[in-house]
Each structure stands twice: as C-alpha cells, then as structure tokens.
Image (cartoon, rainbow, N blue to C red):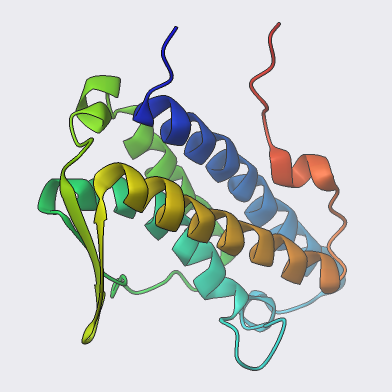
Amino acid sequence: MSFSLYSATIPTYLQILGAAEGLADKAAQFCADKGISEADLLGKKLADDMFPLSLQLGLVAHHSRGAIEALSAGLFTPSRAPLPSDFAGFKALLAEARQYLEGVSEEQVNSFIGKPMRFEVGEYRLDFTAENFLTSFSLPNFFFHATTAYDILRWQGVQLGKGDFLGQMRTAG
C-alpha cells in the first residue's frame, strides 16, 4: 500500500478537528458549571504575545479546511473571516471544517502534488510545493494551534486529559 498526501493529511485533520469539537463542548460546560463568561475564556492567552483561545480555535479550522481549499488557488493567506463569539459557534466552525474535509477525495488532494503553493501575509511570502506546504507548514501550524487551545483550557481549569486532545485514533482493529 502506498502512502499518499491525502493519507498524510486528511485523516489527521479529521481526527484532531473531532477532538477540538469535544474541547469546545467541555469548555462550554466548564463555563456553565463555573459561572464563567465564555467570552472571558475565549479571550485567554498563554502569554501576552500569543493569540487568544478564540483565534487558536479559529486557526485549527483555517489550517485544515482552509489549507486544503487554498491548494486550488495555490495561495494561502491569513483568514479574515469573523470568529464566533461562543463555544457553540466554534464547535460549528470546527464541524464545518471536518464535514468539508470528509467530502474531499483522495484523488483531489493527491492531484496537487508538485504544484506551486505560496503563503502570503503582507509583503512576507514563502513558496512551497503543495505537499511541502501541507506537511511542513500547515500541519505543524494546525497542531500548534490545537495544542495551544488545549493548553489554555487546561491552564484555566477545564478537566481535560491526553485523550481529549488525541480524539478518535485510527487503530488497527
């Protein structure tokens, strides 16, 4: 069996997106149980120079669905879409990303191998092939933002364990 670009990306995006939906559920329940404002929790950062939880969750969706969508144009830029204001909205955003990726075919993703891909923000540009963009830029960013969202929630007292981050693993059974 060959290992394809699709196999290297889409199943992993789906796994962690599903887990992130669970994080949003647990965060909403935590806020309800503790009488904490969802907006306050969504505004928490690990450090002053880092993005808040809201943007971390938004970037999980952007570095999965947004990355695959960008392959067609050959250009990936920061998202300018407004972010949800509550955990139900983030759960919906993450679910939409997951549902989109569930509809992407292996042939579609693999057809981009070798094609030029660019990341742009302002005047800053990085040129990649599609496969190097996904595996050396988008996936690492996806994991960084998912991990940071998890860490912010743990730091704020949401009861989470490693299984909450890992989600539904693809075991051999």
